[in-house]
Amino acid sequence: MGVQPVSVRWIVVGGGFLFAACVAEPPLTPTPPLLPMPASVTVGVNQPVSTPIMVASATPAPTPIIHIVAQGETLIGIALNYNISLEDLQNANPTVSAQFLSVGTQLVIPAQASSAPVQAVGAPTPMPLNFGAPQCFSTATQGWICLVEAFNPNATAVEAVSARVTLAGADGLPLAEAVADPIANVIAPGGGMPLVSRFAPGAPAYAAIGVQTLTALPLADVSSRFILLETLDLTSETRGAEWIVRGAVRNPTSVNATRARVALALYSAAGLPVGARQIELENGLLAGEARPFIISASALGGEATRTELFAEGQP
Image (spheres, helix red, strand yellow):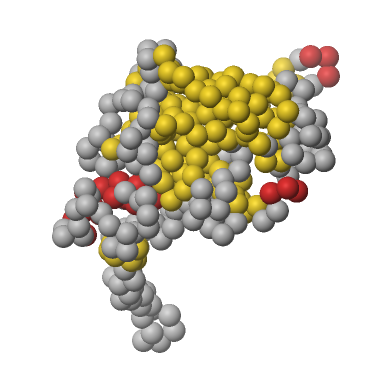
């Protein structure tokens, strides 16, 4: 008999004594040698396992998107609307000039573009709006203030209007964005109204401005939600760039207005908004009541040649 390897184990018994015992280790079983892996594995008789081959299917070419230019649209605005750069849009339409873009022009939108503007999930589709040329003015304390005229081409009034104003670089890529809001709530059918957006001081220098509708809800019955107030005995005067308008506002209905506001817009000779301001009358306006007001606004750039008032209340 050969010598078996042993190991020493300590055994504890009652009284706390330790005994050492010699225990024989079981004999080691030799490990069988590893067999070489066959070059191929078969299942059953002469049935080799085959490796599947992936065959790429042909991808159909995307259908090109055609955009028809509407009144007030700009090339940079259309590019931002489809989430592409201005350069890509111009390359796809080499015969179209950004400076002489006309209504009805058909633009080919590159295949990588989104087929529709990105909107919040669950948000209602906005009513169509047209925009004039946006302008941004640098101020000493408020950063950039941007004004753009929104036109309502629909047969019904619209409310809850808002737009996204984007400052873009020379490459057409967005640098900064802000939401533009109207100076009053209701834009009449065929009417227009300035939207105002603000960029904090330090906003980057830009090469182009884009405008995209965010919200615009139809308002078939204006009187169900708003009271259109009358303006009376209007006079105006100028002090440099400031316009001061005085007059009275009257509630012509039999419904009390819990809130009443007057908004003043200043326009250049080219018809572009260059200044705006809104005031709210204290305690609303009773049915049939008329009350005097005074409102002023300054042209942020250029010269204002005319004014427009918007007066409305809410029941």
